[in-house]
Image 1: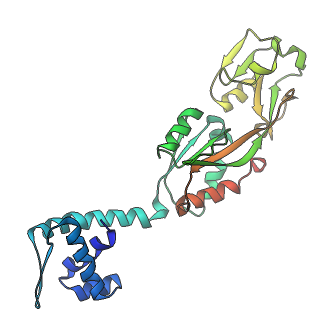
Image 2 (image 1 turned 90 degrees about the horizontal axis):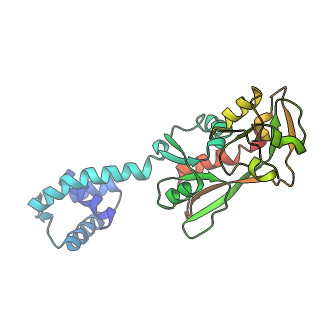
Image 3 (image 1 turned 135 degrees about the vertical axis):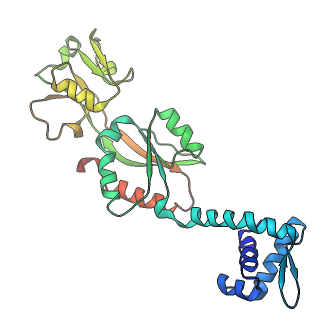
Length: 271
């Protein structure tokens, strides 16, 4: 069913006139009549009884008018009020704590969209984006398929951080503060520390290091402005890419494009 046909019917029923409906829709009167005729043919029923003096809705026409008026109004809201669209973000915890807030600060200087942010692991982020549950996700993975596409946003360096000077050969003697069982500390040392704190909060990891509770691998951008900390370069460590992924739109919705433009303008080294 063509939305134009419904709009022609609603305008005609509202005004009781083909000519006034044509004025509202800014189309020819003959086009209004033709669109309503096509609508009636598509449902195999009459909605309007036509005479030389007036237009009368059939019982089915009255039912359709009541339902369609609200339906078309909601559809118009969905299609036109981009400034109030809710944008759904899926993100890793560390990026949410240390990078994304700056993006939002800049975005809200010019926009009013409601934003819903969820933290999840990669598999859940990818799955929910593919099912249309998220609008944008941020992960270390480049997703390219018929449904989703990714763009590199920045590359993140990491360092071993401690409250006192340490050597790379002795890190197994320290307490390890790790994010999860995939933490880089568990991968770079031949000897594993028997002392661990596992906490899935990047900011808490930094706080624990500053309190002298142990060592951690942290993004180096978190260390800017921090004094009294010591750091070691990771052996054979490449920068970690961070990708922004969206559905593979032919034309990006304007409300998403506004946020994406802001994201692109907020590189990691600006934080």
